[in-house]
Image 1 (spheres, rainbow, N blue to C red):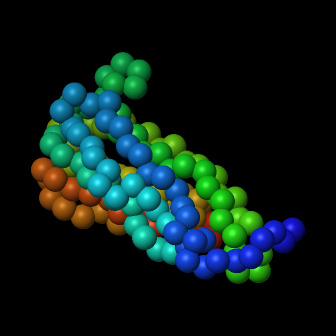
Image 2 (tube, one colour):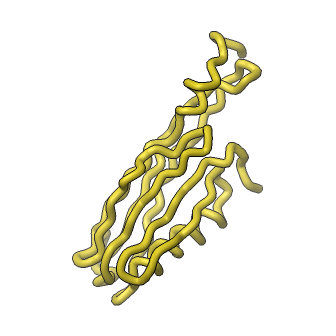
Amino acid sequence: MKKGTYNPEAELAKGADLTASSYDKTQGVDVPAGKVTVGGKAGRAEFTGPATGKGAGIEGTMNLWLSIFRYMRPDGTTNHVAGWNIALALKPGQTALDTARAFETYINAGTRPYRAKASGDGDRAAVEITYTGAEKR
C-alpha cells in the first residue's frame, strides 16, 4: 500500500526511542543519545559503577527499551518496527563494562533488526545500538 511522497531526510531521521532504567542500588545508567535512527544514528546507553546484583523481583536488574516506530521506504511502503524491552539480571560486583557487554551479546544474538557494540572500562562503559533494517533469522 503506497501513501504520500517519500522524503529521504524525514524518513531516515525516524527511529526507535532508547530509554533505560537501573533497578540496582549501585550501578547507574544514563542515555546521552536516545534515538536509534533508520539513517544509522546510534543510540547510546552509559553504565557506571559496580552492581549490587539480583535481589527480589525487579531489584538488581538493568533495563533498556527501544520503542516501536514506523517509517516509509523509498518504494512508498511503510515498515513497522516492533519495540523491544530488554531486562538483564546483574551479578554482585558486575562491572559497567560487563553490563555493556551483556547487552551487546544479547542484542547481537537476537532476531531484531539491531546491532550493538560495547566499549569502555570497568567503572564507566557504554553500549551503542544501531538499526540495521533487517530481521535476523
